[in-house]
Length: 278
Image 1 (cartoon, rainbow, N blue to C red):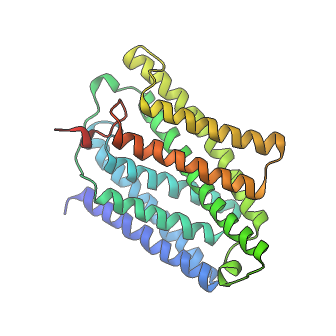
Image 2: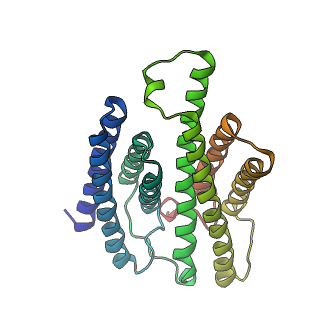
């Protein structure tokens, strides 16, 4: 097996094992399983960094030019931000969301055509890795806010219906979930903003125009406006709880379409190369 494929497989297994441990900690209330899950996830993210290092030497640039690489990098950013978030909140339930999602992204990536797509020379710039990093870190933070939002809505529904089952006892309080949701939104929005700004600067260097209304740019702007409205509502109008959780789940649906749907369904500068090849 090629070194990069071996590292990729080890990463996927690490995320899978971490997910099982986090689920065990959440369901069985076993804190030791959650602590072990953190260490396994940390090992996985280090191995995952090795995957990008090897691929970097293969493409002589930032290895995020195909669907395979993009999904893999999304998983890495998701795990990285979760581990940082976990330093503050220590919530196994969020690990039970982040680790399985990262595993799913890795498996989806594994079934995507794995081809080396060298970056177009006209696009080679120090702004490219900055743009990619900011954009994907923003997406990862919003994915975590989505997870916290969904958990909040589940918890809120059970409280209002007064039907308390085992899931109710597994989930954190709605106050904690609301704080996690807000924290992730507060982290994701600056990253998304920097991603758009750096992308515009990069486009100007490459094509002589800051904005061309490429489908990806248009949908990224729509998504940015939705998250801007959500944060504005939280900071000035006092949106909290159910409304904020619901809005964050809706906004994430737009983000998913911007990330995957636009790149797969529309032609443009951001179309995944592997799907546009004859």
